[in-house]
Length: 482
Image 1 (spheres, rainbow, N blue to C red):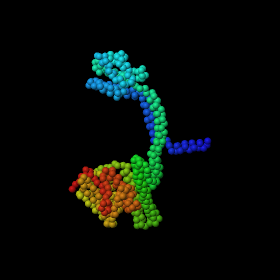
Image 2 (cartoon, rainbow, N blue to C red):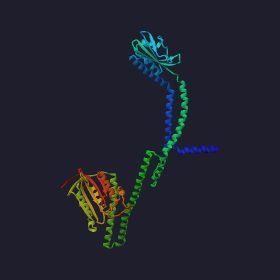
Image 3 (cartoon, rainbow, N blue to C red):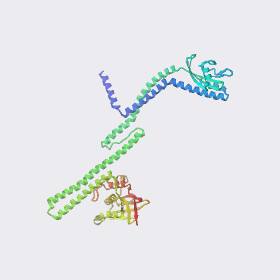
Image 4 (cartoon, rainbow, N blue to C red):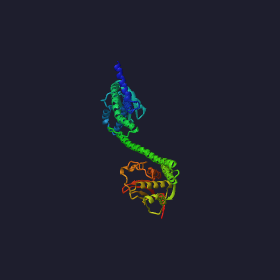
């Protein structure tokens, strides 16, 4: 007894674990069972309850069609086809000629009521009614069944009576009922079995995908989504999740790099500020020259720290706020001003800034402050990555419907597979944080957000030596003067 109870408990546990409430297995299984029950119910209703009504309706329609054929045959004087009409439709046809008091009709069909009896109540009723046609439903006492009669006036003195015997279908209903009982049991059992296997076939790959997705949500990007099922939607889901996994792993890596790089950039100037402040306090406070040098280093590091914080705040603002202040300004004059900020590099480190432009003045309409940031950051980026010749080219080209601003360095360029990542925060082609004196690592991300807010086309080109960053302004955004 205890063995039986343990088995029942094990089976119950199995179904509780395998068939969870509201699971895909349960829903598909129940859907197929409910659908089967619906079909079976439909069969029971129409094969058992409404079979008699349907049969009567069908015979009535058949009788009406036969009457139409007969009327057409009479109009064309083709009464030889009367036997054919009666035979095809399994009915009796009787024609009564009141002028000659004669009867004619079919004699081979069973179930005809009062054939040849002119005193039959139905015939007298119709002839005296003056109607063109009329239907009757009578009990045939001779054969103990229902009979449908359709009375038709062929002309003023000729009448046709068509009658169809309704065969008792009680025995047929009993046979169908017995048959449907077996069909119902078989279909329900098959629905349970087939429904279970279909639901498992659909749910198993989704369950596995769900388990892998949970691992990915916990940060395990080594998981690979796969399925052996040849189901289009599931295969498409697998491809989408693999793509999402790849992108999330890149984002996670960039996030770690961002935290490491921001931490590095914050830590370095803070460490230097503290070290030189302690030096001033403990060692050089009485030596004016050394004290001034130490304080200047503190100021420079503070400025660099302030630049980093400003870039982080700018990027955060641009990503959440796209408001722009449009105004007219001279693009060439702005570029000259920005190049002037880097004069110290020209004097001390022999950098060369080459500006090529089609006109002396180009008036553009945009957010001046933001476009200034774009050009400054692109030039600064070119400085950091240009070649040994230390040349940076700023080229303004006139195209069909726009001006294109190109900022080009002469460095080693960027690999094709890395181009789509260069606009990300702190992304570097060598995967290492490059700390330099003139930037924070957020410049290109700021450029991307500003240009997107302006709806300006932008990009990067590495087809020639070095790297060229560019953005375009449509001609309807500005006016030019010679």
